[in-house]
Length: 347
Image (cartoon, rainbow, N blue to C red; front, side, top):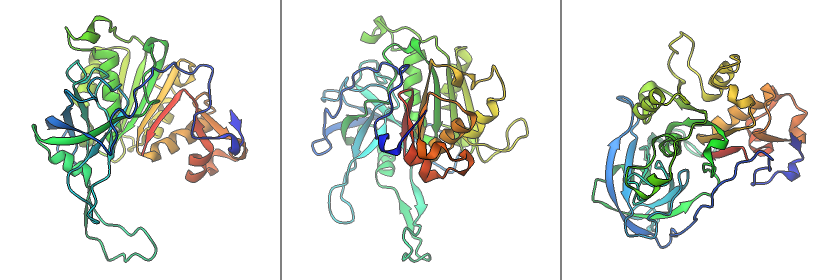
């Protein structure tokens, strides 16, 4: 499918097989008037000992307007304490919800997210920057959030997002979930909603039913030790035959002796198997969700075009006539747009 660049907007192009999404509450609490919540729990959620540090942080929003306001796939704002280098209050940072719609507790009173500590060296941003100036750079909000302990107060806002949601009838579709790093957060919430269900005795338990659709999760990570929620994903894959989990490691050799690969490399390799994990890309039932680093979406979109797989993207006419191998990253970002069967949450 192609169109002119002028036709491409921030809104996805309509697809007749598009999912019906539920209504989502938005901006119940604004960042300039956040509510005070409390940290309920915090734990490391990495598979092994890693150079990176990522935590599963649960936040208690009981008694605030945010209680029961979220849907799986949305995000919320965190405003860290203190001021910036100019003496002004810190701005809001958005974090993906890692919980199902009913929260961690079954009542929508405890939500969770997956912050990663940022510890790096300053890198030149402009040609005039001194390359010898490389002091330690620490992220503001994620490090602050990872520092919190149970009982600590935290300012939050939200909900944010109305499209990265599961359809109203999950059994009408099959699912390809593509994640890198902390982009696994919303998929934890989705899988809890599709396969695990709410705690017994909670309001949602009376009407919930397990999804029987096909679900494939490709989780991209530099090292095996960096995988997030791996124990849960392995457990779900072992318990539910309709769910398959594909850890995809870029900086280690594969078990079959092949070299490491990124998410789009894994998809490409699997497409050679007619009944393999990626055969669902040929089905009009399939919805694709991508969450994580923006480079993933570039590689995936270029691969879909090279393989001639339609239904997930719309390509501007100016780009459609150019060999796919010659597409630049900037061209893909500007001239390839998702349809309603492809949900993006990349950063």
